[in-house]
Image: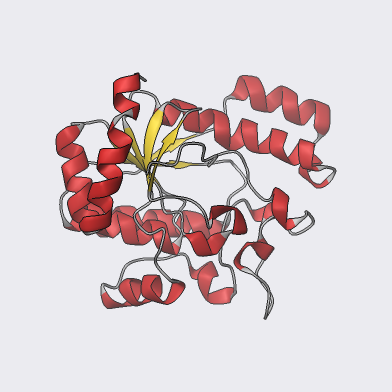
Amino acid sequence: MSTSLQDHTTQIAAMAKLLPAEEVIKNLTELFPQQVTFSTSFSYEDQLITDKIFSNQLPVSIFTLDTGRLFEETYSCWSATNERYQTKIRAYYPGHTLLEPFVAEHGPNSFYESVEQRKACCYVRKVEPLKRALKGNAVWITGIRAEHSLNRHDMQQVEWDEGNQIIKYHPLLHWTTQEVKDYINKYNVPYNILHDRGFVSIGCAPCTRAIKPGEDFRAGRWWWEDNTKKECGLHIHQHQPS
């Protein structure tokens, strides 16, 4: 979008340090009417934010990326969420003009072969659909938490996403896992039951496993790769507002 939109990041970052998430989101919807969106993967964090949006009747559009390789339990959580809040969360899918030739050339499980192949799969199934989902929006709300990855410890709650030309807001960045669980339990929010089976970060079924005792949060994602490479391209933070 425009440079003027990027200029709002510092102002919003200051606001995010002072107000609770629901008030920040409300202010964002007033500043950018019908241009605030939230991406959910139906994780603990995303379900918490979904509850805050619907419980406070905040005019935020919610979407999910259906890669075609999700867990059955994720679809069950999706259905339970629609039923609980009487809504219809929109899904974005991989474009067939990219996906069909990619699978035809490389096979359905080429992501196991190399980091490059895995990232190529992530691009087709997640990054490209995300760009379509974010188009026309000014603010992208995410459920990112710093605990989830070493690469996220230096992130700010509000940042400028140069690649997508959008302001990103991470309301739960500094929340602990226990704080998230306490909220889910207190308000009886639907959640993905895979969390009860040792899954922390839940993505595509072939690329996600439960973590073992003593392993870090990201160990269950792309477990065959080095920890420093475990990002899919959805979240690349470049601008840090002061």
